[in-house]
Image (cartoon, rainbow, N blue to C red; front, top):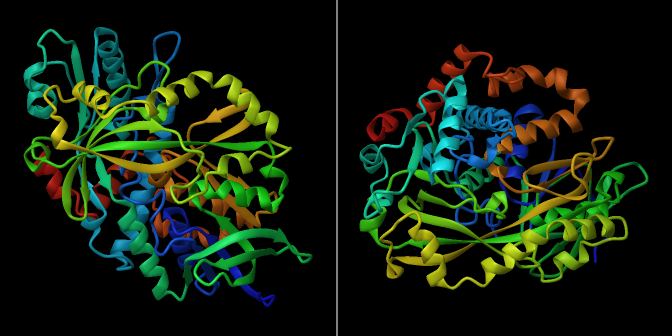
Length: 500
């Protein structure tokens, strides 16, 4: 075992979209800083960022009904949808900057234009969707959204879903053509290829087993070579833990006060993938439905056109599952070992509160393939068993923490950054909208962890993200300008016209 300490400026733990984004930012803002990356698997983008492990929706709140809730007075709260849309616009600007500056190439390898749709059934849901459409379509961020409850129009938009559907069903949909399908696995690998050219030291098959504070305030990481078992010590002034579900354990080992009273609850997902090209050819959109009563937001059913390995696929899901692992490649003991004296009551409170979620997960785990087909047939009435296979998606670890609004042990649905008070360490926890908002989330990390550099960095950040510090919703002209330029750079504009 080597006790030689290898010093560096920044260490990024995990080879996913978050580390890739933060590394890319830092190399533009402080090119002289030395950066090391440690990833347990043999290449980048293999866990939560992998294209088969996340929905690749390019979450801009164009179709996800759980981002617009109906308030008790019947009005629709669109504040979360606005926030997520603005965050996705930030991602698009950063990716455009990378493409324009030839730091990454061939944007069509990771992003494609694709209509985003919401579809609901039943009178009550149709009324909700219409109200949601009215609330959103008045907002510049959601310009171009269309609503229809006319079966003939819906047949044009979603023929596969409308074929053989009983005509007495109340059904409605909204459609917006500026949606995207994003392959975050490919994007992650592109960013790491770029970082390699900038002398970032990327070590695959290296697992960070421990982390502790040194007397001078740096962080020391115990890093194990997965193949040889040899151990090295690496120290850095700043550490970012972006290891998906694996982040919680490392955050706990850091011992920072901010890591206390936080737990994680793992939820796995299963998608059905269509292997019949004739069926795939009949659908061109991401269509999100409404979660069943009692189901958690991450289980909203959706039928998605995807572009994976330059091939068009069709995915339906997700069906929730349960595994105590925090990563697909994790350990069966992950959940048990994450329970500590400081979070045991938080975890127990969540367990008592979330009985309906537990019951839901058990029911989902017990589903047979035929029962899953029945759910699929709510979307595609004449779906055939032999056309669909099951694919296990990534593990998601939902954050559990004590909050003012929810009290002890509240399950959080979303993405959270936990930062030490002195900004020397940050960890990313949580799930969707995750990857889609990576750029915005990493900007938050920069602001929280490097406040002393922000004045000097601001002009460069504005060059990368022209809307930085500005609300696009309140600046429709800037919004239009950014929409036009990012669509052109990322190759989304002409195709949009073809498909709309």
